[in-house]
Amino acid sequence: MITKLRLQNFKNFQDVTLCLGPLTILLGANAAGKSNLRDALRFLHGVGRGYTLADTMGGKYGEGGELQWRGLRGGTAEATRHSASTFTVTTEFATVGVEQPGLLPIACRYTIEVEAGRNGRPHVVREALYSVGFGQPDQGRMLYDSHPEGNPAPQTDPQHLAVRIQPGGDFRKGHVETFMANQPVLTQISERIVRRPDSGADEVRAAVKAALASLGSMRFLDFNLDAIRQPSFPGQNTLGDRGENLSSVLQAIHEDEASRTSLVEWVRELTPMDVADFAFPADQIGRVLVTLREEDGQEVTAYSASDGTLRFLAVLAALLGPEPAQLCFFEELENGLHPARLHLLIDLIERRVARGDMQIVATTHSPQLVRLLNPTSRADASLVYRLVGQTDAHIQRLGALPAEALRVIEQKDVGGLLASGWFENIASFMATGEG
Image (cartoon, rainbow, N blue to C red; front, top):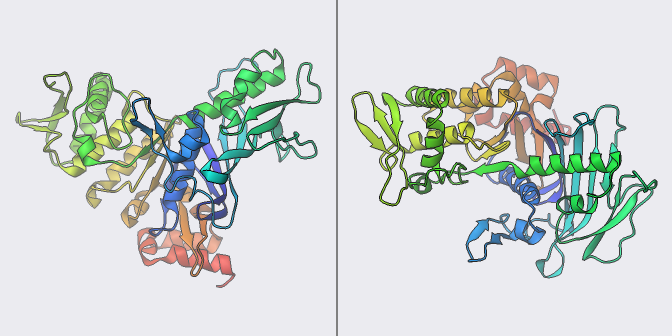
């Protein structure tokens, strides 16, 4: 699980830290910066997928010219905060689940600093990976670092980045390797230390493997009803960011008896439809289209199902599908759902993250959604806000508010507080020292 995300000079953030729990709800007005946090996570996802910086930030195209990856909004030109020449993204994550004999689960901190460069060609100017597990000093133990304190690696030109790697084997003082700077070291280093049969190299390899697994397993879901309604081929078990492949993902869920029962029960709870089962008729070329079959035999295909029903089915596919991501980011989670049914969605999500193998981040403008969060999820929610007259955005975790503010939240209607702008007022008072 990703536990922290620190952004320095990234978009409209000067220096902020977002603490993430199993479920992290992002609150805040339009243009406050919630979508910029999404872009920061997408940047890390591009790193995890092994893309170059130019591809991560500007978009990646296949051999036939088809778009395989949408770059960051604004590309390289708008990734850096005004007046800054570089931006830095730092994340902390757990390595639990990485199979490496003789090594205990640890936490790691990954840092990458990027300069857009002339002609919009981004390159890495600093990169580091540290273990920060139990018993480590505050700064952690270096696994690799291009600029370790007191012993920086010699840098020669902006096209390359020299990195000092943790000592081990014959390299008692640490070893320096030089990497291409147009791509993160994280995706290049394993090939360089594969022949080092020492414990130091083993730890570096395990941490790199964990980092790539953590950053590479993300999904950013902003559903489009036209994409959701399209048929898909059986076996396409990964839900697209816009909801592509919904029918084939639901078909894969339906093939498992226990998952099928859960799927039907959730849909019956959500809608007034008496859904008894699902069907997946195929067209002439073999594509399937999800069809809801009611108790009286009536069938409703994805073409005519309500928008809210389809959005909820897409959420179910993301959470219950056979190939779930470790982190799912949902834009405006409440879209298309009746407020009276919203509690079902929150219940589903909180149950899902409680299993410990998925993390969810979502934006919302819904006071009702905030009311429905359990105390832990509410404490993990964060307000993204801007002070009057300032362009920089700030982040305030609700669980870290002053004791007086927490007492008000416990005693008052938290949804009403959100709708009235109370949270922004408290954040402003804390930032300016007023009140």
